[in-house]
Length: 89
Image 1 (cartoon, one colour):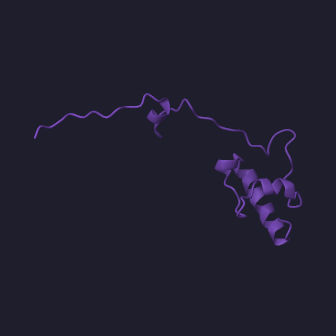
Image 2: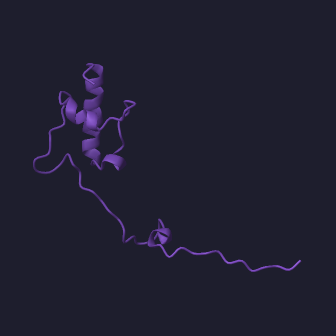
Image 3: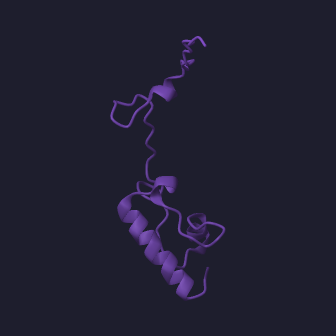
């Protein structure tokens, strides 16, 4: 039997070359929707706002999905838990 040299096809797609340790050109960071001018105030009585950050199963969505800052995420989770205990959500 003869051995064949089989070369793998390489994708010329830029996203396939991205690595965790490289400088990434395609880094998109969103701003926090709950901070800045005109941002809504996080309150346990504001159920319309709180329902946006809760999944269908009732779990609090993580900040990497919602792009909320760490400080606002803590306030948000606290107010969601308060609203749950008062049966508002």
